[in-house]
Image 1: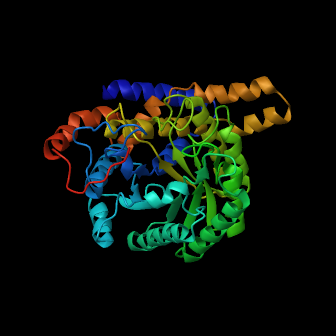
Image 2: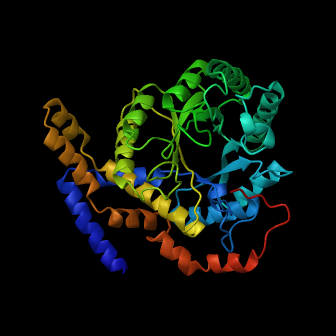
Length: 409
C-alpha cells in the first residue's frame, strides 16, 4: 500500500508542477493548519428532540479531552479543544489545563451558556428583567475568568435571544441592552484575547433573533473595538446565502474572527463539514487563501468545529470533518491566483470558473496522505482509529453515566 500511495503522489506532483503549483509551499501550509474541535462533540449531546446515547461517549470534561486528543494524534492538526460552560465546569481549571497538556492538547475557546436556565426563557442580555440580564453577564464574566485560568485566547459568544410574536419585545431597547452588556464584557477581556460574536437568523425564537445575521454581529463588533470580531457558523444562514461573499467582506473589514465549521441541508443541522456542499467549503477557503496571501489584510482567524453527531460515531465523525476541511483547504491552495486575477481582469467568465473547478476537481488524497505521513500520522485517520482499539477501550471503560454528568437535548 505505501508503494501505491507513493506512486499516486508522484503522479499528482508531476501534474501540479505542470500547472506551476509550488508543491512544497502547499505542503508547508497544510502542515501548519490548525482546527479546533469542540468538547461537546464528543459527549452525549443530541438533537432538539432526543439524546440518542452512544456507548463509550465521553461523560465529563476529562474524557472529552481524551477523545479530542485522539483526534489530534490521528490528524496532527487539532491541538486545541473548545469548552462550554457550565457543561465543562470543573473545580480546578489549573488541573484541567494540566490534564489537557498531558494529553498533548490545550484549551481553546471558552463558550458561555446563557440559553438553558429557566430565567433565560425570554432572553439573556436582551431580557427585559434587569436581574436576569445581570445573571447572564455574571456568567459570561465568570467565563472571562476561566479564559485567564486556562490561557484561552477566545471568548465565543452565541445568544438564543429573540421573540416569538410581534410586539413581544421592543427591538431597539433589546439592542441597547445588548450593547451595554457586550461593552461590559469587552472591558473585562484579558490582554491578547478577543471576543467573537456569533449570529443566527432564526431558532429557537420564531419571530425575531436579536443577533440575526452577520451585519448585526458586525455592527456590535465594530462599536466595541478591535478585540471584537464576527464568528461565522456555516449552518446559521438561510438557504442560498453566499457565505464566501460574507467571508470576503468581513476579512476586508478586519472583522472576521473565526468559523464554526459544519454543514446543513436546510438550516442549522450540525452535519459533518463537507457532507452536503463541499464546493461551498472550497469556495470559502479560496477567499481565505487569497486573504492569507494579501499582506494588507493579515487576518487572524480561529478555525473551529461546531457539530453534534447523532447517527455517526462521534470520534469518527470528527475525524471525517477534519479530513474534509483539510481537503477543501488543499484544493484552495492549488488555485492559480495570478491566472485567476488575469482572467477576471480580461472578463473571461468561463476561464475564471474553469480555474476554480480545475483545483476543486483535483484528487488531493495522495497529497494529504504524504503530508500526514510526514507529520507522523497515518494517511487514513479514520481507518487508523478503527485499528487502534481506542473505541473498544472506551466502550468498555465508560459503562454508564457519571454522577452529575451533563447532557442536553
